[in-house]
Length: 378
Image 1: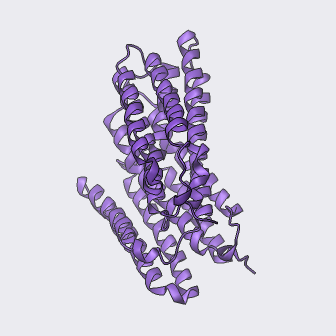
Image 2: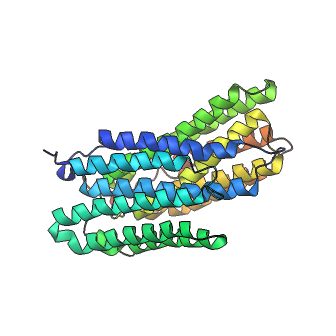
Image 3: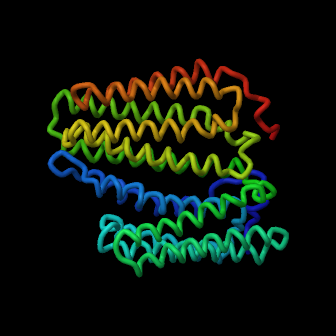
């Protein structure tokens, strides 16, 4: 017997989705921890490259499962079983993360391909249940299956070509689905549920920031700079939480967010930014990273956060557009200027002040402007 989640008026995250998030947290923790290890005060090029190359496929798994559940989850036994198998494969995939650009590449891509095929199976089951949406569901199923198969085939190759083939599969999967966005407008997302799920993902990532900060406290040789970095880092995380969620409920009613892709892909940048900031704060407390690499993490992380945070609002609320662009430029300018300060602790403090300026400008120039015409009635 199944519950009618697909037709629920007040759809919320299910216990299965929350369990899925728990496994995702564990995998994200492994990916993020790779950036915690320095070598003579530096992060290697392999570490910096591995982070996006590994995070993006794992993020796409989470997002595909979430979007499927948003439209088609009926809490069936088949959905539960397939989701649990995907979780088990994600745990196995996490063991190959650290060596994913080396000997672990084959295992990583085969597990990724298997997960994508299971997600295609979920859409195949939806194809059987929803006869009125079969053309669209057939296309999405084929996109996921073909993309996963191409990515998995990279395990048979050697050299740089294997990475190109792996991400070719990912690109086929993503671009083929995005090409169906007009048809997906006829099958609109449950905005309330998707916004809730995206918000939970942001909380997960912010939690990683707190975990990284707490873990660093046990190893720090405490002095005034370490204490200041810990306080500044927490203030930065708190300011990010405040500004992210203060206007977040408006996205549930934004008329223009029909198929969800703007919100979905903007969150990729936001989540990557937050994970980079988590490691930036960790290294500021430990004092184990050279200034140039620290600045790279800080500027890149905050720019990705500003981009991911602002794009959905710029797209959905036209009266805010000019202020969004100018506010973002001001705060990015403060962030870049802070990176030139003589100590990493000073740079972190300047970046935190930039975030507080961002909060103040948002209250003054954005949230004070009426956007009721951009909101649906219900």
